[in-house]
Image 1: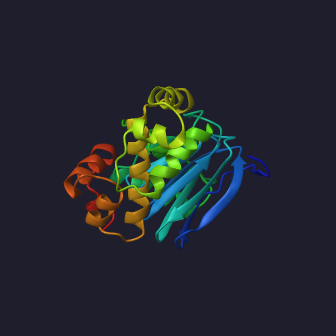
Image 2 (image 1 turned 90 degrees about the vertical axis):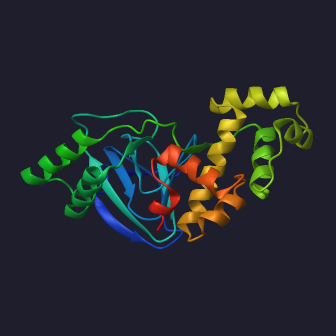
Image 3 (image 1 turned 45 degrees about the vertical axis):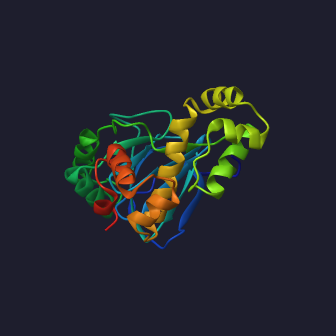
Length: 245
């Protein structure tokens, strides 16, 4: 990643964005909490793309180079967290957004940088209430090996089909064993888990853009709408219909 803008202070504000709105590559000396109360947020870092609907927020550690874009009409709430107190470091982290955290994030973003004593107290309460999301992170890792990229391209071209890893291997010129080993070496997960992430990513983008649950399930390769609803609820704690009304 080159051409990285540097911001000493992470922005604290609320932005209403049209579908496709984006922010270019940058980093800041503060940590930042990013929450989309509507639509879907995609946060892109060197290792891949993190995505989340309005049931989760993304914690970005200080110094992490990132860019982001939105899908669907999206309201994004940004909260900068200065270098003090409780911090998570390393990769972006997904945090839970129960009703109290949601209201605190929105209030902190709307009041702007926490410069007054009252604003700092509200920010401290927000940070104290943050809890890591318990499920596996929702992200699509960046693939480096050309054979793995070909596998991803093949699946993304038509997610309604369900080829085995052996069938994909024949299409890209690699054995099933080789592809399985490459997935674990490059992204730390098996093919089945990775493909589930890929499908869930596409599904969230379609829902944010107004597609129905039934059409989304079919387009993303789920065996039925109920199977998709269950998969979504397992990861995000709510049904897709309740999140994307």
